[in-house]
Length: 476
Image 1: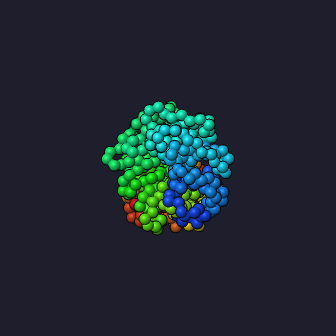
Image 2: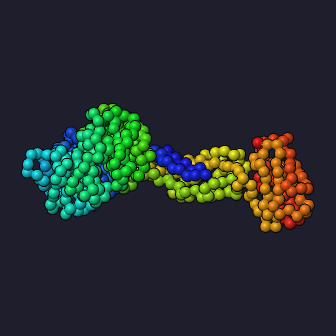
Image 3: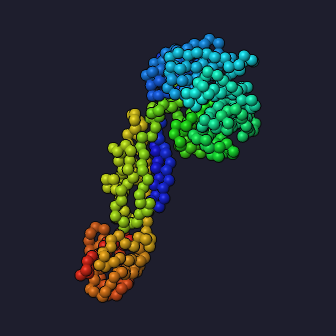
């Protein structure tokens, strides 16, 4: 469920979207020990790299997979594409695999002839700029893999991610690192304590990002890595991966069947039930349409087919509403076939007339992009009163009709702004339309005793030879 909070004296938004996890039926051989590398580059085409040195490709959204490369020596650990054609797979034994044709064919390069190193992370920023990081070195290419250089000092760590073409982050062991010079050098910006080893770091922009690791560790920064705050994950399991789905929706996954989801940019997390046991998840990937995939031990792949939220509302206008105001338009909904419901809702408008002061919950509902993925926005509207709510209708010949206090309890004051001594009749009607009482306006202002009237919402009509004024009165 998605929740949208709109209080007419202010605006705040939070999101809750249903998930629909299912085990994916696919054609990948089940004899691989781990599927670690996993990425979709569009809604149809995706890649998996496994610990048997194989790369698989799907071109029909994940149903069928074809082995497109097999390197018998290394363990393949990560997949990243800079565009629809250029992609990389990193692995053990100092190797990087490169494709220039969308994954149809692959070549293998050895980055270092020295001691064997495992490159556990690769991030292709675009078709030319890519980074590979492992246990010792962090490598960079600026020409699409034709040549590589490595940082002269500290490496990024076991995970590397660039939020811009210059600013990148890494993590591994107890360290979080940062580069501001396109990976030429790295600086440690945070150190965890004890056994809270870190496995993955991701950023939504150059300032805001999250790192995850052992014991359910989730660390978040909003100042470009200067400071990091621990966020409660609700688990003590090792978290292997973190992925932004939108700017506010994230998934994290790891050991012990753990898949957790955040709707508020990583501040809070809740468990995603998959109804399985003894599973470890290594990688999360998302299609452009929002379908999210996680891969696990052996050939297990799960997909959340609900995808991105497809229900959104524009900001409310105006930002305040009085109990006696005319109906106002509710925020536009996307898709247009979504609908509002709740007290005071008439079509695409909210009418406060006839409603008591207080808070009203309105609900926007839309079917999702797949069965079981219904989306809802819940909108909280506050009907208010006060000195700014004294009039709903003005007559240029009479000016304003001012009622105070409103709401009233025992006695109210009624004043006509442009009173010239002419005869005026005050009519008080219940919400049912029944005439309750009539008064002659002899003085201005005039005090009216309402102590014997039951609580409720009443309509006041002031009739003179120059015209009519109408307003609402609440009696408490």
